[in-house]
Length: 238
Image: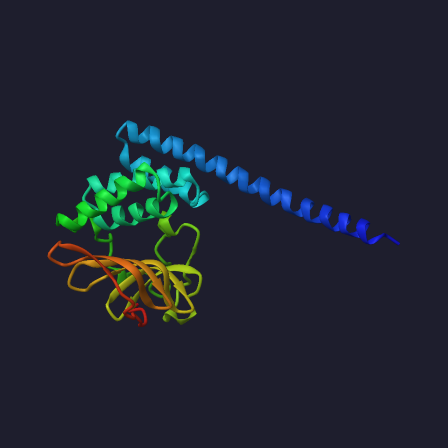
């Protein structure tokens, strides 16, 4: 019979043996992400912006929490900011602030977010390539998951959002078309609602309600922020 101390040591050894492959796999993913970030930066220096975006977003799918990920979000935000793609720039600026709130990049992000809110920008660059109601229709697939939601799987193709949980999807809610994280059939997490007549609101949602500070772009191009907990609900229009 093994003593209690020997049993404890054996249990600890088994835990370590099970954990080390996971740790090694995680380290490999981080190393791969760093390589992609470096490639993205080199392409950015060469002004090959579309290729740079692909590299940064691929890296963020492997590493979405480190300081290197914050830098990748910062570079992506700058690209979209200069392209007048306010929705994408705003989303990446928010990630920079969340991941590295005390950094120089976060200070720049706050300044540029304020500039977006002061200076109306055209929305043409933020429009999806096809109407949201055409995405996710039965018999097709959900849109690919953008980098900022890269830790999630796409929501399953369905005629109801009620089965959507822990996934990224595009579906209709009472205010318009919501894209982002879903939990138990409701917007929950980071997301954005596009209004039918133009403009959008982006930020965090909790159990189907806006939560905390939201960034709003009106149809006339003006920006403002607000803090509220109004509810959004509904079923997809596809």
